[in-house]
Image (cartoon, rainbow, N blue to C red; front, side, top):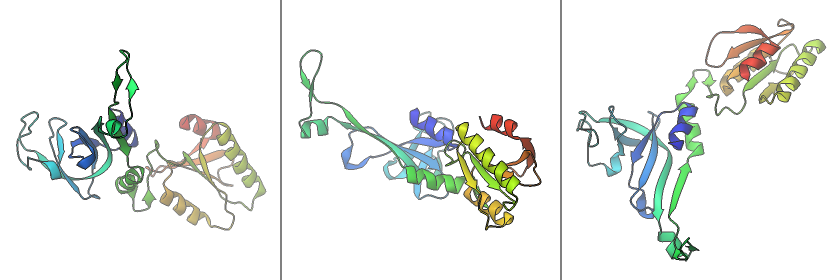
Length: 236
């Protein structure tokens, strides 16, 4: 349940998939598979319940009845493994003579398990699932920053000062900010770079915005002017 909650927060639908686990495991082994075309594993899954199995250890095929709920028509899909859990039993406790005394004074061996999330694999799936022709669209829950602040018209000292002050204000509110204050780069390049990087909110301060800020969510084409206070309230 904890794994499923993690992937739901990212915006990914992961299926708990029965797997062989290899030579290290005992009987319990599960992979967490995200259905995506940018992958190489094959799984069979049921649309009526949560049954899912890796093709490598499957005794079923596409179109079969679900062995768990008996619904017709198992589906086949390409999926990427983004996490796994498996039971090690007491094997390694015994191998390494790792034991402890229980309440009754008996020497017992711990039951061990392995729990993994493929962080770089998850990033790859995010890049494949959340993008457009301009670049990445980071899910807010795992974005490297919350705000991509862009200062335009840097040759205008007043604009530059306003942008610096707003940057400081955001930091004091514990809002994570990527600040593009480059003076040698044209406005169009800054905006293109913001789309490419894909941070959830692009905020522009320029001579045109005056005391307001220009806000554009990365996953939307809508651009609007907001007060600084309203934008901070939105992020919080």
